[in-house]
Image 1 (cartoon, rainbow, N blue to C red):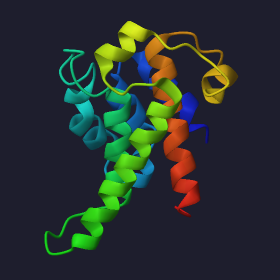
Image 2: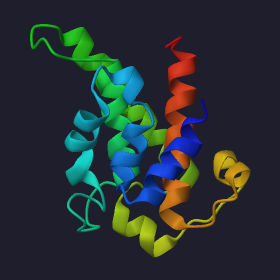
Image 3: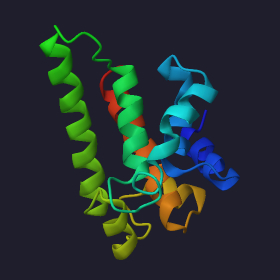
Length: 149
């Protein structure tokens, strides 16, 4: 299964960046496709299309990583620390590739496809948001593989 291609296809169909990333991992989350699309629906375009907050691709990725590494018991501080560390690491990796994580900043900078975005290169992607989406998926895949998930 090529999750990057799946996410790219979701975006081409009209789903937002968060939905496209999260949807590519629906099978790992314990949620139905309808549920994952619903929960991630408002996070596209930097939350509600404002472009003023966190990139939707980052939001979708953090949702997936949180669902796969759940913190659901407020009496379990280890789980809380774990999911925070995972989210922080994802954000660090994304920022290492693109230099930013805020939607508006990314749109202004328009970082292109580079050697740091191999999935985008492989899929022949040139559009800005598609690059963010497939790179976010690729980073989640790397993190899951490193964790043996």
